[in-house]
Length: 162
Image (cartoon, rainbow, N blue to C red; front, side, top):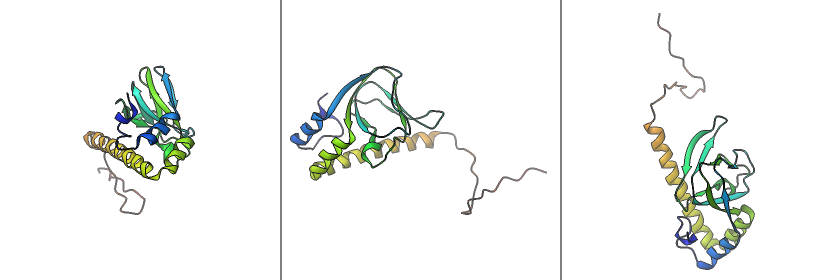
């Protein structure tokens, strides 16, 4: 897959894309391998070439998203000033990806503010679409009982039948 065909790079200058490619490592990771865990230092940004990656949160590994489309980005915590990943990423099958070290990528983005802005606009669009998919998942789940706090932080428990 040519990098300019990915969701993240259309509309960016060729020399900018080339600089990004120059710092990119291609990796093949076996099924079941953990790319990063929730709470691990957020040092890399990734783009999927082939395969499927399950993103999970929490100790029980609640699945929140599956990265499965070639060109999809993940590991975005590394680019948003977060020190640690907010989710875990595990390969559901043998996976090929591009890995970029955050400080090198950030340096390229900082030196080219026009293409850096386009990059972050594309990234925010991708994350926005992912968030909408998660909202749809949540809205289709059975509604849980809710307790009202009336702004006090204390919840009112339903009264027991007499």
